[in-house]
Image (cartoon, rainbow, N blue to C red):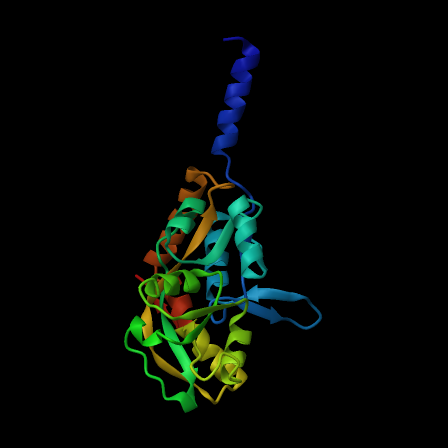
Length: 255
């Protein structure tokens, strides 16, 4: 093989073994998992338990990992296209596994069904939603799971809203009608109901448990680089650091 081609091959091999000095993450306003916080005299920045976990992993790897808060659709598109290297929070689904290397599930939560208190609606099974308007944040993991539950339920009007805050405000105001309900992540709903003082919303029942992971874009991150990130994360799980972060925020570890 000519010397010139040997140099090229060796150079490519070395590039394949190099570790990135930065992984850019995107996420959404999804309190208490991730949210914006403002320090005096500065712009909003991302905060929350997943941001803290990312920071701990990247400190261990000695790389920079900026996190940007965006609307979910934009964040997802950037990560799927490889313009951002990582994204959270991510459920395990066929679409997500095709687009991302997924870490193990880190936190467990639940999807709840919410209604106006005056309705006294109680939810036991998906068939209870027949004949109702069901609002959900989406497209999202929540709307994906809800769609699976409603596949065999007739006469349901599904309403997609782009923001959980707006969703709960509209529910309390009766914007989804007398039979209207909403499906929201339980931790998110409790956080927003408390934060925004919603007094006319009650949890009517639980749809199903859900767990969330961190995803690294398959379009931008190779298997070896993902394994380095994942190994650092697993070390922090093993020494109790990840569980301590989650519990400090009132969340339930998935491991």
